[in-house]
Image (cartoon, rainbow, N blue to C red; front, side, top):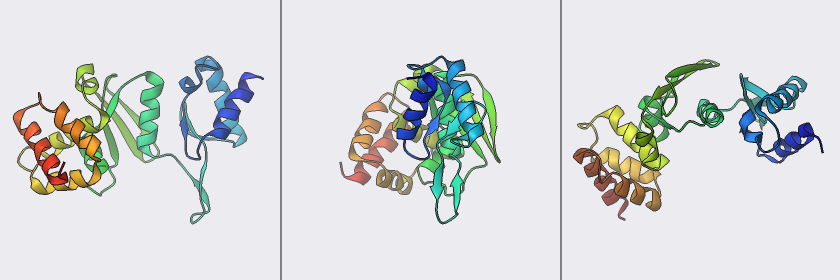
Length: 202
């Protein structure tokens, strides 16, 4: 079986809307070869090219009678995956992910183990802000997300109502992780984790 056929079959088996980068096929081909195959598939219309080096399997929305592009968040995680960076939503992006702000941000912000960099994706900007690896690797993704959201809203605004809204979106397991992983954080962050745990009743 050729490299191109193997890559095409893997994409065919993926869910519609899945996002791909060349490094996703490292077990089949080199990055350059995988990128060549993906580029040819995009030219044929088999997949969508979201931006340079990032592709997606079309997802049809019947109500719109169109294939929809991947979300900026999916593209951001694909970029991170391709570069072997660890990222977590920050600022308004973190607030949006947790339902604390329903407005869709024009700029999708992430803290990242990679360099400071901004990517243009359609009408959106994807901004990566460097942080030390320990800030991202010492906790689970959900804990990183909540911590970044707290930094965005500030200590004074992190009240019981916010804790209840976050608790409603997290599972018991995620809340236990938040509680355990913020024990060594600043006192107010750990205090907020306690509020979330109490609001969930776990």
